[in-house]
Length: 288
Image 1 (tube, rainbow, N blue to C red):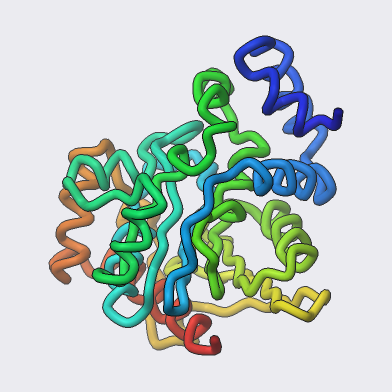
Image 2: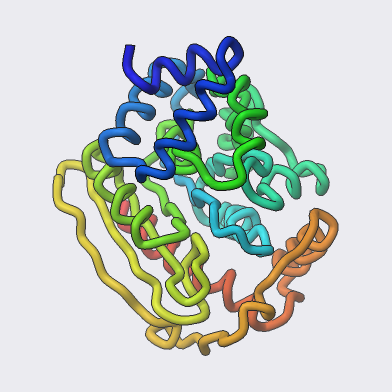
């Protein structure tokens, strides 16, 4: 039995032992091999969505920035679905403040919590908020353990890698250069079409509107990871210097900001933050 199997099989039986392992992995630093081991094990246990008769994409961040930030990827999914079929994989907050589904549920947006619902939503609406716990029963017992740990765990790496929809490509946001490098190697090993982005200015798992965005790109059939960086000004956006101009808050505040973003009525800094992420994601998805 490997570490991933032990953790998944013993979350209910031996929660203290499982918690100790997750904390130890974090303190040591989760390796590419660790992540691949967990992905492989969870892939074998997940409930899959039947193939949809069109290309599907995801924009999912790992979370873990620890900042009071807006649920940008939720607004981004809604915007992108006007042009692309978006299967937005996500969850309620585990180690952070407000997860995407905390806001989605409060707004009564349709949630894909069965394979049939997800397929129907993608087919008819070009958008599904895919509720991760419904497709990963092996992780149900992990929730209280993750919530008891005051920092991200290996499961923060895994969320973007386990979408039950057969994806064509995805954009993954990461909160640090270290996480970006690891996930890029994992995506290359798994043969995923993925662009991984990190906001170096504010430490967010998004394309930056505050400074340099570092990116890593993997392509199916290419074992190499391609890297680069760019500024907001490269795409005619003005850099935002103060994180407070982008900050979110509790569910109610983020719900209001999300509505404003979708309607194009949010403050300029927040609207530009959404726009540059939409531009980069759309440019990448258009290649497939």
